[in-house]
Figure 1: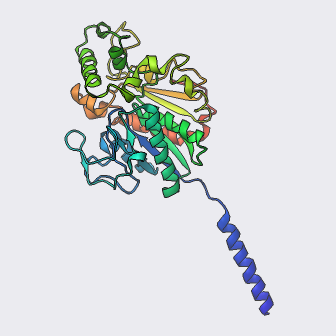
Figure 2 (figure 1 turned 45 degrees about the vertical axis):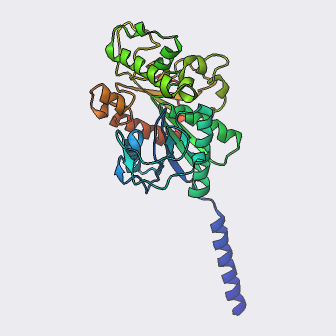
Figure 3 (figure 1 turned 120 degrees about the vertical axis):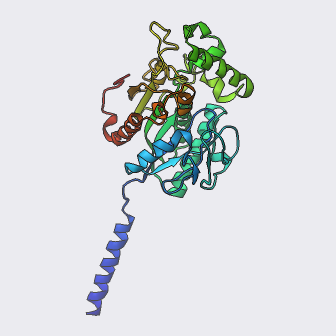
Length: 341
């Protein structure tokens, strides 16, 4: 009798041990990535800033929306300059946030795209080791889309165990920004066709470049840097081969008969660039596009005297489009390329 009981116990324990080694479904999270000159706090699904905007001006609405749809959401820390994120005051203020992560995992949103990508990749790897995340859906606003692409390349080169399921870019300058091209000289003030808001954006951006962004990611917004046979885009061929990409662009500002290098645009990025229309399929083989009549950001909406929800980062239609891109990941690679582009 004792032998039978012992054998039964052994079989039971063996069964439990075997079940314990079976791998469950991958743990997945959405990672939100800020753009040029942005400062954004690190947030987790259960931790955000207690004062001001819980996840900063670029991510608060999107984070809340995605959490409400049952996603696990993290915002990648970003600083307008090197170092850790600190509380901010003034426009888009936030404070009483989760403990800041080290500078090596914080995106310098004014530095080079590739360096920003390396820092973002470290953050994503940290999510794997510390938060047990196996798969991520990346959502990049503005240059955050380029930072995300650089991070994907780094993760691939390092053979990271974490998998990037999808990439969604919102107002990302895949081919550059007409504002940077104005500074570089390939776009002229006359291309504004007398539009005062267009002219004020060009002149204001030129001042910003001269004052604080004479190098790094702002200079890398030029079409001459990103496009061409030796451009940054060409060097990314193969990186997105197995990753479905959704591109969301805004066309709030338009001028009949205007140069497509400028018109239509969202106040910062021309629609042609946001939809990567001239980026080859060797670089971007699986793309879907969505166009909405929005501005680049709530800051652009503010200076244009428009409501906050006219911004790509706050429009419910964009929030739904991002959710749809994430939810449709399983079949996205089978869809026809360039739908809506």
